[in-house]
Image (cartoon, rainbow, N blue to C red; front, side, top):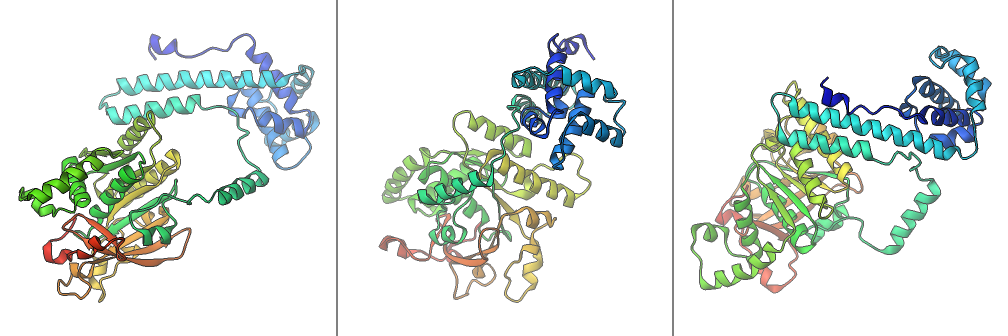
Length: 456
């Protein structure tokens, strides 16, 4: 350890041990006092190991619904073989004698000193990461932010709500009439899912060239532009410029092929000019880094949160995410990515929509319709997901199909509702899909994508 690192190790002040003794002495007087102390501090927060051992024994008694007093704690320490580590039986009487009124002040002093030590340990870890060979900036910054956040999180553990409080919160939410989740660009799918809910992990999966990138980009664009929700689209499949061109084509209803070939009429330019304004005002952020990782995604979301809380993450696609270190095989790597994305949804309190590839299992079935078991590489995706949407287009296999221009969104898993199938009109030439029931007459002239070209 270097001299610089040694200076970061905080030493206890002269009042810390007395504060710990007052806190522990209070905790072993009664079960009610023990529970009150446990709402402020936990055993791992104490500098003196004996105090941690004693509080842990008292909390075990309280959590079992048993009486807490010095004799009961002494019996529990003896049973667990921890009496010597706790300083012996006479020390319990010393702790009880140390109790003074206003113990809460001393308990908070213990918690504050624990946070000070945790912050010093975080600083040491950050220095070690910076000095380590093979420095990865994204991973190091993400770890540094996480270490500092963990070290500075309020130490009050009394954040559990009673069922009465939970019922009141739920009833108030029902009375407000607000939608349960964020709406999607397609009303039928919004109704089927009751929107995208913060904390959800949603997989949108399909075989190549069926349309998952179009669905993902349209969802991200709708959230960022129409709903005004800060949205991150992590795209390893296409560049930011390619995605932006698709968004302009979808919004202006100018053929994407015309846009890419620069074969535009004056009318096309008028529509593009109007669409460009809406797209440019969108709150969508696109990260098209080739080597994207979970650490980089977390860093991006934390960066966005400094201005405004992000409300949606779309990842295109799972198979191109950087494999976590230590994964023994592809199955374990995909399982780690799936679990990591679920944790991101919970940590940042937003829905995470992940595009994924399907294996060839569906191509061997007569109707070609996919199943959740077709998800590539790992069954962890099916287990972690709150919602699984499988995309199917008959014209991807038969261009003469009477259902050309339609895309089925199969809701194969839905934790908050029944499975179902929603059919959309697929306009691959505009880079979008729309509800089958058009909202205005101008929407009726859509052209089957099978006539014009495929989709990503």
